[in-house]
Amino acid sequence: MRILAGTCALAAFALSGLSAVADPADDTLVVNGEIQMITHTDKAPDYIDGLSEQYSGWHFREADTRVMQADDFDNPGMLGVEAATEVWNAVDGSEGKACASCHEAPESMAGVRTQMPSFNEAKGEMYTMEMYINECRAERMGAEAWDWDSSDMVNMTALISSVSRGMPMNVAVDGPAQSYWEKGKEMYYTRYGQLELACSNCHEDNYGNFIRADHLSQGQINGFPVYRLKDAKLSSIHNRFKGCIRDTRGETFKPGSPELIALELYVASRGNGLSVEGPSVRN
Amino acid sequence: MKRQIVLGLALSALAAPAMGATAPSAVSFAEGAVAGSLTGTAGNPEEGMKVISDRGLGNCVACHVISAMPDVAFQGNVGPTLDGAADRWSEQQLRGIVADAKKTFDGTIMPSFYKNEGYIRPGDAFTGKAAEGELAPLLTAQQIEDVVAYLLTLKE
Image 1 (cartoon, helix red, strand yellow):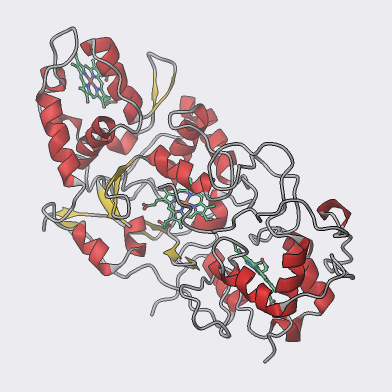
Image 2 (cartoon, chains in turn blue, green; image 1 turned 45 degrees about the horizontal axis):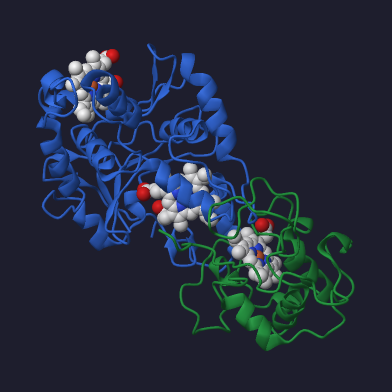
């Protein structure tokens, strides 16, 4: 049994004395026998203070859940990818265009997910993938924008993520991104709600530990959208953030709000270097 | 997605403090400890056991292992085991820890169970909506006393 590295885990070990410290599973992920996934690194980026190593949430799930992600035929999230592939090719809106009209095959999006969210120069603000998609729909296709958590939207983000699988996350944190990053960082360490818990309390100080039945991961977002077995559907990043803040007995932020966009950038940067896994499988 | 996944601390049904109970803001801590009973009524260890194990109440086992409760599934390990807690802490210290652990352990992750102000974006229980009006503490004064009475049985 390996000792989970990271000062936080060691401190927890010292405090808990006899409590078992559960390791992230010592396992490697290769999807479809060909896509090598970086699910663990020995070193987080220098600008992340609280983490030494990085782990994908995949390491903290049970073996049967981990296996589901290794083959597209077993990964229920791939049904969303298939559905989005049809939409990709379907004409919609007043301009008579499909995504395919301008972007050709979905594979043209390879690498896009690694950079999301990114600063949209033309708009002068930080854009998540959902926002880029809706910009194209509303302004280039003359089609209706999709709701953040609609199945069309989450499926499309799954399709666009899937063609970057294996590539390392690499969001920019400097230049125009910096002020968003600072804001997201501040949120990450803010103790919200009546339980007064920050993201860091669970995902930095206690990853590897159990909170009741839940094996705490680092709360990375390289696997999004994730197919959650308990909901039997794909879930967006903002939906997960909202759920975690609600669990602090806190007042949540809305998906698509400036707060969650900033938090997304910061959390994405904590995973810079881990492979894009979306759509991944979690419980 | 509508159920809370982690800490099932529901608002105690009866928000109004029992007659004669010390209000959360009036509790005085001396180096983390609280000297006298919050209610004047002796704690009931059996009730305390329920509060500790019930997801909808204290749900202390979300973070603590208590070997004396083998039937309670999925005890977490974010905090230290509570086995032998009564050997390490006095009644007054335990009352202080349960009422507001931050007074004993600076900056601890352990929630403050007898406190009702000073929060950032408090919600209306686990709905995700903003809390309205005055908040009730996570546990009632009597529940704190019941929990302390149970903890005092944890000797090795």
